[in-house]
Amino acid sequence: EWDHHRKAGQKEIPFLFVSSNLSRLKRAPENGTMSVDKPTVEKQAAIAEPVKQPAWKVWFENFQILFIALVLALLIRTFVAEPRFIPSDSMIPTLEIGDRLVVEKVSYRFHPAPGDIVVFDLPSQLQMQGYAKDQAFIKRVIGTPGHVVQVQNGRVYLDKQPLQEPYIAEPPAYDWGPAAVPANTVFVMGDNRNNSNDSHVWGFLPEQNIIGRAWVRFYPFNKVGAISTQNSVESQVVD
Image 1 (cartoon, rainbow, N blue to C red):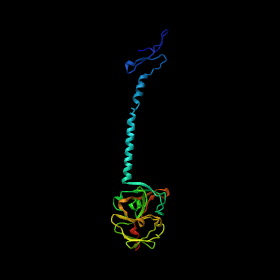
Image 2 (image 1 turned 90 degrees about the vertical axis):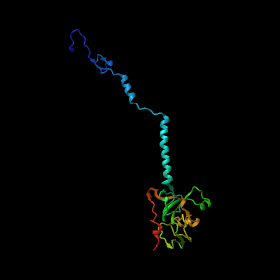
Image 3 (image 1 turned 90 degrees about the horizontal axis):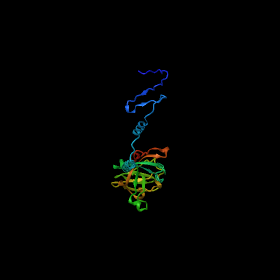
Image 4 (image 1 turned 180 degrees about the vertical axis):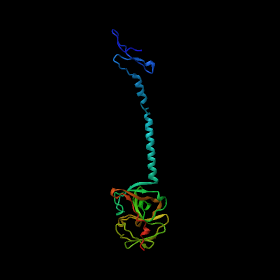
């Protein structure tokens, strides 16, 4: 048993600090403090540090992510939808110059319907007029296979019935037809009837040239929303 009372002529014997690791048993200094085992702290810090991956592996993982993103974007643009902008005034007042649209392509794995606003690759007739092959037009479908279309006295007739067309800029100032729409083609017109290079100029549009249907306008922001097709042209026939 330790005697903690210093006797005369004797020096105080300091306490011994016992570590769980006997090899690290140390004698406490006379000031009563205990030294820290620095190598142990350094080992713990080393264990806490994350393992660094090789630079080539980081670059390869980033490349994989970028490649997958590009493939997905390409697939969506090719088969689902793509953005387009309006470069001309042929569809005024429905669409104006500078409008940005989403063109959806899923429904055009089937057949277009009257009243749809479609984006299409140029037929050979327009390419012969000097238009670039990679250009695209946007027009409204008026007649589909089997319909008889005629333009007369400022009115458009479908199967001899005049159409109600609240979406046009002004009545057409020309006559055309009558003519039946052939199989696998459509008859298209711009809503700005007197300033549109459409089927009344170059003929019927092959269905295979159709890229997709104008679906949503996303710019300008005050006009964001679905693009109305006025239900269908057939529903606008005057009784």
